[in-house]
Image 1 (cartoon, protein in one colour):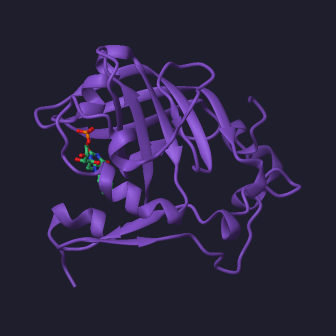
Image 2 (tube, rainbow, N blue to C red; image 1 turned 60 degrees about the vertical axis):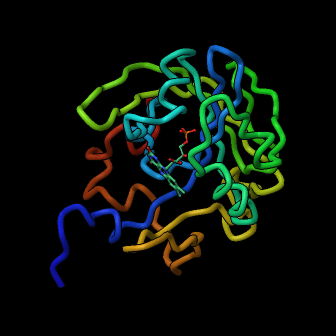
Length: 204
Ligand SMILES: Cc1cc2nc3c(=O)[nH]c(=O)nc-3n(C[C@H](O)[C@H](O)[C@H](O)COP(=O)(O)O)c2cc1C
């Protein structure tokens, strides 16, 4: 089956996060986001792609800050409320009923009931005609320890982080499940000396 190039997102499972921001006038905003990724292990940066007309993008430009909140599947209805194209003066915490959670390093609040909170500051915006790439630096990262195991890793079967597969006319909300195979990072290298610090975490 051959698909149009613009359908590339329909063949890739995507995460769903909620980005919370505050405008310079103090209005709180929340928007769901799927085009977001860390920039390699073990660095502190991440990048998100934003359509040019987004209150989220304007707020990040105005304040230089944002919070990436990781919602569990049970927040999916609130996710869809926050996806609506409210005008910038609408407080999306009030609209969605989601409760703010004080952040440690940025003014924008996080969202109660999420699994993790990634506080970021703006590093660089790469502008194109229709979209922008926003590079952020993670300045504070916190997670709900109820969903972490003794090894300090997220128990995703209990946490149920939200993800999504996109279709022609809508979104199929999903969540990660174990595929039956664990692999140590060391398995990627033919010999110990090949192991790059980026994968072993030795430089961070
Ligand atoms: C699951 C999901 C993922 C989304 N991912 C993105 C994205 O990666 N980039 C983007 O610009 N808009 C994305 N959107 C659309 C915005 O969330 C939506 O347009 C929202 O109203 C923007 O709000 P804002 O104008 O308050 O920033 C997504 C929507 C949903 C439901």
